Image (cartoon, rainbow, N blue to C red; front, side):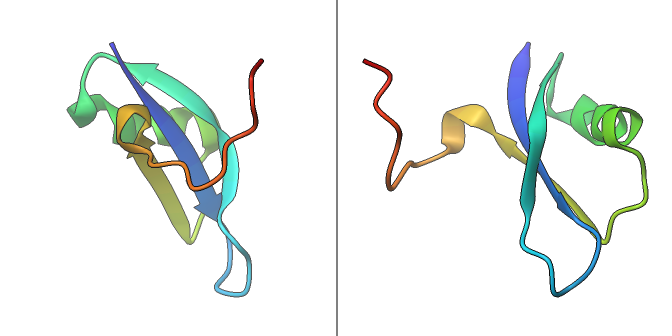
Amino acid sequence: MERFEIYGRRSCDEALTHLGSLDVPNADAVTDAAKKAHGEDWMELVAIPAGQIAWAIEEDDA
């Protein structure tokens, strides 16, 4: 399984908002899974592979 972080916005003047995480069998499945989980009423719906995120600032988990 691969984890993706899902972001979306409904209009140009909105910032992308984190909608949640999705675990899917492979990258080909993320589009359908994101639409199923969050609907299709988005201007943009973005899926970012969790392993590819480069944190500039990250809350300390300790």
